[in-house]
Image (cartoon, rainbow, N blue to C red; front, side):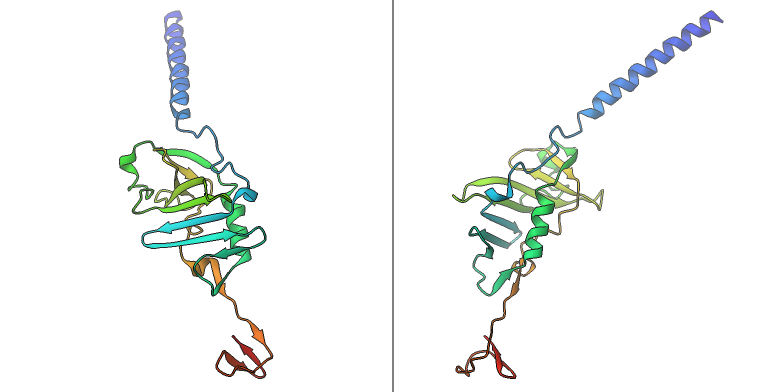
Length: 195
């Protein structure tokens, strides 16, 4: 009976040691700093988003945002506010890969990922990431930060917000006027004109 108790004690010690070794190994795959962007929104004066052959650049003049090279569009305030609320609180949850050869698999390489760049008032890069859809989890995205080789899952799915289409960020601004002096401009709305 004493011999059986010794074997059980040894087995218990081996199992506990195996548990701690496994926990230590798994701990290497957790992100050491959870927050992705360590910048303040007040420091951001422009942002660039590009994917494939499409890109958009938004600029902040201190009071309002504008879409560069798209004079007919006005930035949707709710869209830009929602974007910053989500993006600046975004966290990385787990390490997916450290191998740059896997970037294409996780959609964070230069050809398949969407690039997001924040710039300050001097047009210097504050932060740059590449975002890709996660095939493993619908509630998160894959993200690669700057030139680092690591790919992480994010705390939220942001793939849909990293949209390079100008019409996602802006809407056509219609100006109304009651002056119908210039008949060549706009559309008549019963005394008011859209120009």
